[in-house]
Length: 440
Image (tube, rainbow, N blue to C red; front, side, top):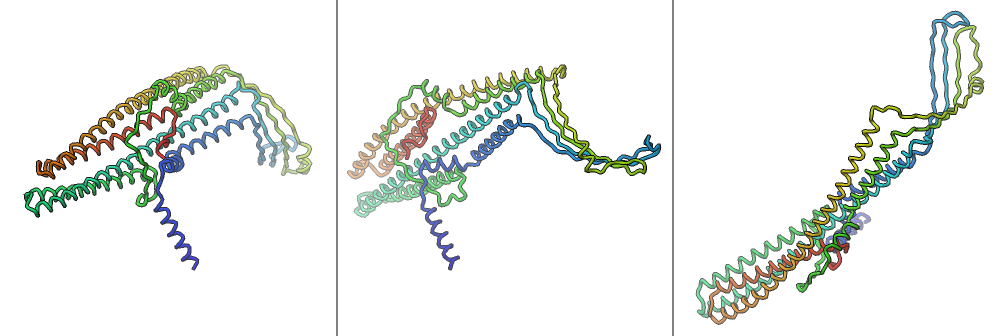
């Protein structure tokens, strides 16, 4: 009974899951939390955090214990004037601490902290990339569904024309060829409808694959109704560029990497400075001779009597390091120049991307406005052709041409509309606005 209940519960949960339709926000959120590239970047964040923790612990002293045992076989001992055998052991504790090393410990900690920031910005960049792709794929689903609606509407019109042509043929008003053409038109539109359904399924499949879902077959999304009376939002190009410089993680990462390179120069320069290390040793030892005539105290007594405390202070002053320190500083400065150039390149890429997004948004809006005008003209032409056909002034071939022109214009307008929406989303993205705004 329990197994049956679990089976029914699992089945009901599966049905609920199958009926779920994803919103754009849910799709973007899921991708940013579960995409493997994002997860990999977050793992790199964890590694960077551990490197920072490691660097922060380097000021602590080291401590290690030791226990040594040895057996000595000598050829002559002066006290007994013959060979001897001796067993000995020692145990103790060693400790050392870095007192001064030119600020290397703090510099390494600062560098590790910067690398943590850099890895976080890298994760944000990956999230931004995957989010833009999700929005694009989601809009492609919306476009495919709108094209499907156009195909369904055109099939309905063609079926009405076939019904009308059948009646006219039965009344002897049109030739057999016109009826056959009407039948062919319906057959073609059924094929177009089937193709449109496949494109919807393909768009859903592509989005499910991008989300890396285990099973795409029951995946579906909510319908976002995008009106045709959309307008072009005005942006100041230079303001968008400056906003992108301030907010885009790719630029922030490049700036942080430049700070890392600058810190590397300071780290390399510590090679010219002395290192002061403090040490401490607490130890004792025990020895036992196996020869007669060589007396030794008991091991506990020896361990007690032989206890020593050794304090040390060592100073290591670099004098000649085969020019290694000098070369390390030079290499670090070259790396800083590379990081500076990389940052400028990244800013240039951002500027070019913003300019391209700005251009694409404006040009796609113009294309959308032209497509709307084309639809209006095609609707008037198709309506006139329909009236002319019903009046017997044109044949079904001319009517079909007018109707196809309208369908083509409607499809082009839908494509132009969603192309414009995505282009605006890219521009909104660089302007610092949420990607899902207006599509929820």
